Amino acid sequence: MLKLLVRLVGLLLRSHQVWALIQLQLSTGARSGELVRVRPIDLDMTG
Image (cartoon, rainbow, N blue to C red):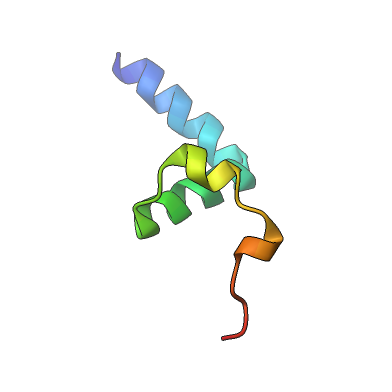
């Protein structure tokens, strides 16, 4: 089980997009399904 977990983490760290989604999910509490549906217009980038 530990080998599988280590392998999975290794694969995730290779994908910058997946890692960014994980970080965003952890910092916002958003569900993963909510994050993959976010459109640029949904984001407030005014500061």
